[in-house]
Length: 224
Image 1 (cartoon, one colour):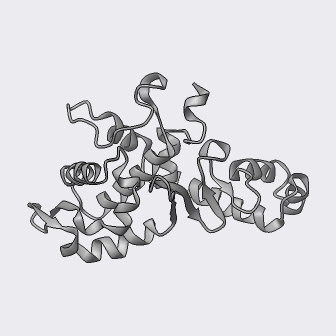
Image 2 (image 1 turned 45 degrees about the horizontal axis):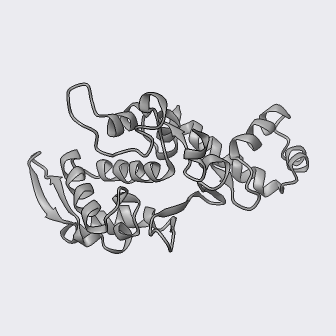
């Protein structure tokens, strides 16, 4: 089982929700569907591999983060499903929202947008330039894509902090020292919040510890 997740990252729904700023329940609904009978919006890598289908991969995480941003800015789940399907076919991939094509060729995606009256209309992303260029594109600029697969390879989630499925099962790490932010902050909390002690203990710099603390503090505030 471990071999199947090496280099792919693994996150339970609650953890994924904290990282992208939504509830774990919402992430679960996107990947498992709802009790009302609505099917899943996204197709997870571990659906048939992990017990109870309660974990997602790094690529799944990136896709969930894209969905969360589209939802915040008024894109319906119907429209997201349509965009997901169109891009999957165009780029021949199971991860269309993690594909570099979304970054370079978003104009080809048709989305169903709710207007002020609540009615929906199918529009080209080009007609919604503000939506794509102002809210989606800046997020995508924080993602590094693989030259080989054209899929997301690393997410610069916050200054100095990255999520890379090749390291620590995809847990957030301080980029300069590759130590998990959670590890550094646990040591920071356990040692009287003495940054110098933690830095010396792990062979990191005080700046490394400060960035880990800032990141984890931000996650805690989201969850509050």
